[in-house]
Length: 215
Image (cartoon, rainbow, N blue to C red; front, side):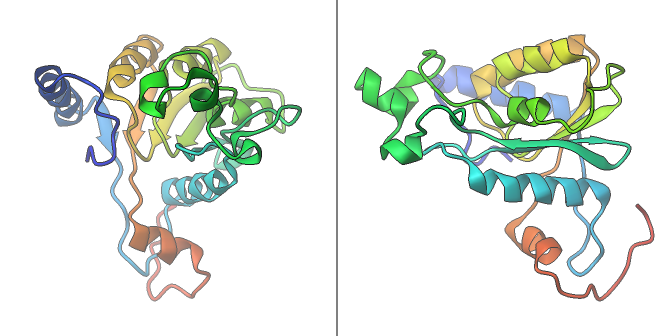
């Protein structure tokens, strides 16, 4: 479950944090959404997560590729990926990570430095919404990566998102702060890590061998 996560914590702290995160799953505070069988029609959750994952391919960050889709009543109303604003040169255009360039440090040592010039995918999705943002928390955010603490508090402030479905973890230290912020706003959290096999099955365009009538 925690593969690929940024484990920039002391060993004892990391182990305790992992136990705390596991507890959130064991108690149902974070719900894990099951994947359907290979060959079955995608669920709405799988469909929207697969789209978020596809969108992440446009990201301009060297280290993290994140994609986001905002859905209301099963309809996509906003989408975005992480990267520099269109009026700024992106890291890909520069040929190197901007944070590493200006700090002279490794990416892992620049966390929370305020040097990143990218806008995160969930905020780009919000800015790119096709309609006036609903203010009743009736929308669902599908995010390939769990939101950072800054994006979490911004999402709370929008009063638009009532549930976040995420596909992977990122930074455990930030994760705990984000969860606290989101839970206080009664935003539901769900986990849907699409496997490579299932993602390809959903997006390859082949006819499904069996159909699941559920939505």
